[in-house]
Length: 133
Image (cartoon, rainbow, N blue to C red):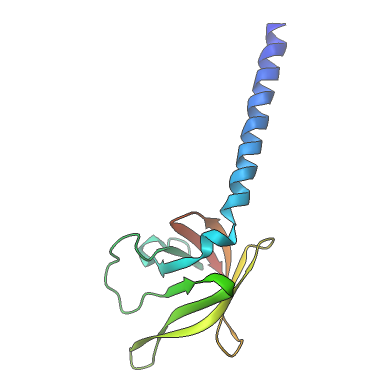
């Protein structure tokens, strides 16, 4: 009897864990979390093809030649930093699209061309990792 109670308890704990993980995953890919200013955290890139982004105010980032920044706003509007051929930096306005099911984030210029496509692997309040497509 004690053995059966242990199994039932273990099963109940496993189910609770599964339910809480499911809720967390639902939040992990919420487009509301994506809105705001994001800076490429080059120092955290550890796997080729996967880029790490932090909130712009997360920390004082080390100086680099160029650090990509996206500002994702409501109504799928965005601003993004551009590196010109003469090393100048300027901001362009475009749009962004988020596909909840595929976890794809598309950054689009004002002419409608895709600039960058990420498959978001991890999304939290202060961090997201995305595989560049």
